[in-house]
Image (cartoon, rainbow, N blue to C red; front, top):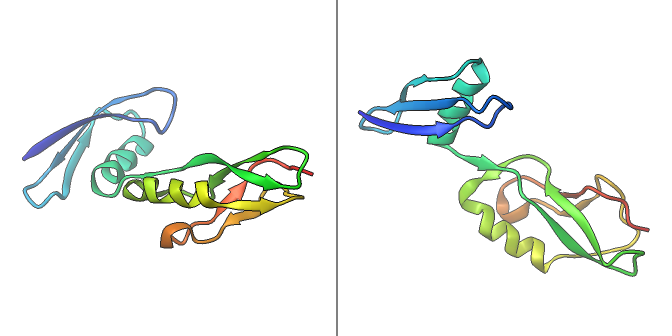
Length: 120
């Protein structure tokens, strides 16, 4: 049985988690958490880690040269570098509003990259 040690990031407490897995990589037990969110985080982090990606995209004809963006939801951790390449290649025409889709279905994840700022 393997034991993976993590620090939970689900809330400000930062609980030290121990996630025990069987030989097939399935989670057997999570300990060290003080709330249910910690248990869920530990299981997800070991079996299918995901992250929100934040960055900026070039704005054409806007009052600012860049607009801040983020993925609408988490994407698989292994797709972060591909996602960043797609974001770096993107340009958007002004005006841009908060929530506008800047990159649709980034890298086939089913997740859109959206603007987090308005640029006139």
